[in-house]
Length: 375
Image (cartoon, rainbow, N blue to C red; front, top):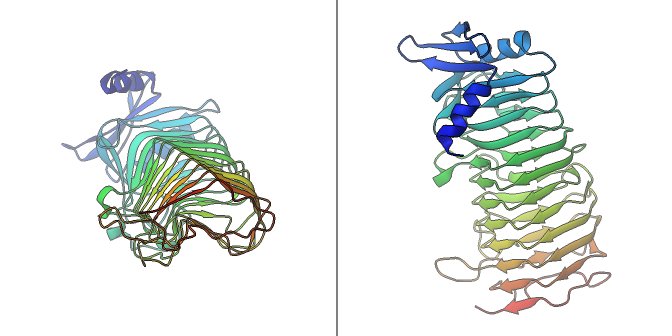
């Protein structure tokens, strides 16, 4: 289906059509069933969308289609009814801009809701109101069965860009969190999955230039909880790519078929005393971890206690810079004597600073069949 056909279909299916009229400098909303314009506003689009959700959507939900435009938010969009879909026409065509009101851009507190085909610009250069730097996510989710598809979120400030709190069965697909070229990165964590969450799936997505310059210990993804997966994703120039179990038990995490490039520090790190177990890190490519300080960081760094029953297999670790092909990454994996009952095997390791390639406690761990390759 072409984009034109898809957009036409989205309009026809929509319960409501929302657009910006540049001649009158106003936002309008039309009832998709009656054809009547029922809402208008000159201050922003948030109030219109919130009024539709609150007053017009039953327990069966409905779709709000945002026509191509730059739409300014004067307050958070609050999705508190189930089965609500907010859909745009694509990243370039439907852009939500955050005005200076000191809160999240979108809050989702109801089940089975979806965001599709739009971009969110946090416009951090104008955010001075209230406690914006401490808000719990430009997109804040506390409900279940939420679906984010083809969403581009960038230029955000605050502790988190997307914050997931206690949610289950959530999927993030075909999204980009960060900014191409690094001119408008997100300051703070990119995606934060809080403890108590389960079965959150992140796939076919990109995480680029998260953590900026203000949050030296931030990560593109921070994950706590059970049964999560991170697959087929691209990570580039984040401070850390993935931080595991900083606040809660993390079990049955799958990290597979991803490309991790140019982390400022470690690509994957776990430093807390929380349990991290029964998980798989497989078939990933790690390139040039630790670009902030050469020879000082590892691709995977595991410390703290209670890291066990892990399978780290079939990965490619390349510790060399793309340009000079000099050694920059210290070890493919450093476990600091905390790993137990685990397998590290069938990995290909190129050009680490340490000739052994990896540093893992032998007690209770299997470390066979790894290829330690030269330059």
